[in-house]
Image (cartoon, rainbow, N blue to C red; front, side, top):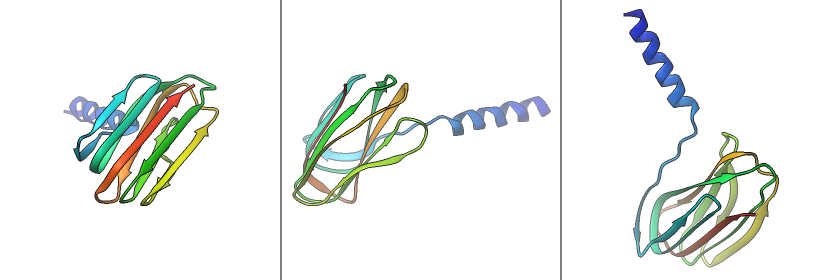
Length: 127
């Protein structure tokens, strides 16, 4: 009995430690691309959370851009187990930027809407 409880505790700890994000959204005319070095999304309308998974090497630079016609969008990233703000867009805004000195490992990009948004376009490239 003690071995079973110990095994269950270890499984829960391992699941809790791993950084795992999942997409949960509804969209109309959504087109996405996700490779190890590039991710993009373009849609007519979307609400919810869209997650991309890239693989960075030490010293990589993330170049990104985004735009939205209606609604509000927040974009986050996680490269070291900590979720951090990347940029935020409100109606009729666009944004371009870059992020230097990434760590080795997984790079999660999370696009999260505040309600319904329209005509969104997002691009993320590791260089």
